[in-house]
Amino acid sequence: MQIMSARRYGQFCGVTRALEIVGERWALLIIRDLLVSPKRFTDLRQGLPRIPTNILSTRLKELEEAGVVRRRVLPRPSGAVVYELTEYGQQLDEIVMALGRWGAQRLGEPGPEDIVTEDSMIMAMRSTFHPEAAVGRNVRYQLNLGQIVIHMDIDNGDLQVGSGEAEDRDIVIEAGPAIKALMAGEITPDEALAEGSVKVTGDPDLLKQFAETFYI
Image (cartoon, rainbow, N blue to C red; front, side, top):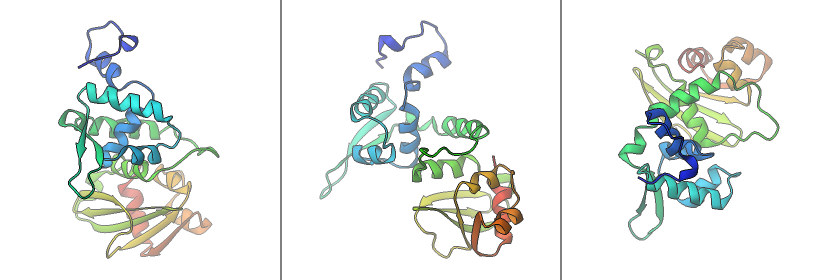
């Protein structure tokens, strides 16, 4: 494993070594998106539209050298090169989700230039899921956030999150920034529905279950 000298902290410590590997700007966001699925270079650029191309190339090279990311060639006829996490990189899953839960407590209101991506919302749903609240529940949620559509399938405390519409969905939730307020307990499901900041197609009681299951 190679670590650039500019990022050496000079301490023999696990936290120090972790920062030397993933502490550079954009590195954890690249890892966040790869935790959702392997991606081509262009996919990563699309999901991180503000990262300069040269910085993305540099970060991927550094993460490869550190044994966190690897390249894989897809079978023909595609033949495309995708980046994916190694087994070592996959160990960051719980760490990234824990950071997401911690950071969500200080999100505040979205700024006019803040971007929400499909992968960031998939990870947000995973990180805010509380399995103990979902025991005995079997629900298929679809969440529409503007052009972003994801689904969450709950099966007796187990969660699967994916992109696109849900098959045989039990409820469709349409929201904007109010979804964060709902998940943070700043507004109740009844208040969100009454003021129109959240709309549902399906049983409104399932929105209450959503707020009990996915919360910050």
